[in-house]
Length: 221
Image 1 (cartoon, rainbow, N blue to C red):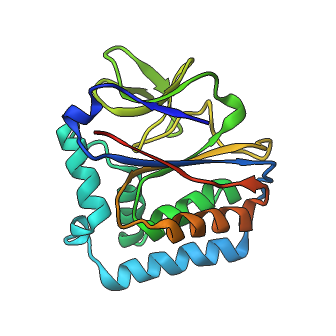
Image 2 (cartoon, rainbow, N blue to C red):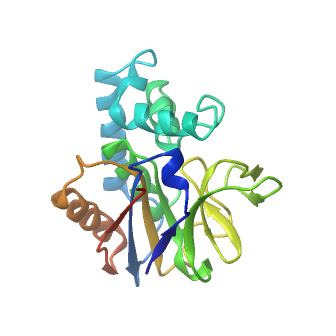
């Protein structure tokens, strides 16, 4: 699979890194006790070492907020998804455990402190593109709202937007019927080495099974 980068995106945000991998023949199951415990342990670690006043200094959070600002997006209104997870953890609020697909993505997002998305590959059609959204363009999001994409960074196919580092669409949601998935890491950086990508794949396959998990990296110039 290939994902194209919108021409000119590098003029706005030079050096953006995205990682993505396909996993095939996965099995999405109800929440797993071990996976839930790992997420809760990460939440506890965050609460022990960070506060609502200082967590925005975390590299992954600060970097994502800076990118949003460059795109003209207020990160306090449209929070990067990993920031929302971290904030929820520091507030002592539970993360909703839905299924092993959603949950393992949340685990990795908390672990690496990066925005990530897991998408139903069979609901995606044609060429994929990282791009900025257009005025008047919307998608039905998992938060129950119709999200306008204007100037927001999105991932789209021939049908239109389906993913973003803010909130994903209902069209590509992960449920028990999903068998093939696309995993995307938004705003990665050079601190992620080969062994980190390998460990991500190992973790996903530990809970979803299946094959694949070879990450490709693309970067704005």
